[in-house]
Length: 68
Image (cartoon, rainbow, N blue to C red; front, side, top):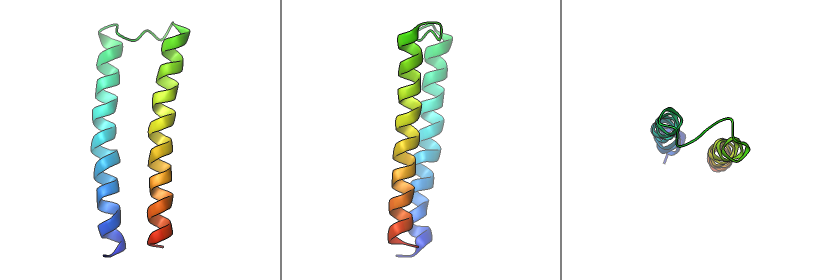
């Protein structure tokens, strides 16, 4: 397995998954399921973004560690 073979699933997972997650959050904001004026909803959005980028970064570090 080459390095590109390891990175392609990462690109797909966080690229396509990120677009779908962003679209879902945008729809929730548009239809009023989330309100950025509420403290709890702001915290939820922050946690969702932090979790997404944390998993993305940890996965990238792991792939880079295995295939430098």
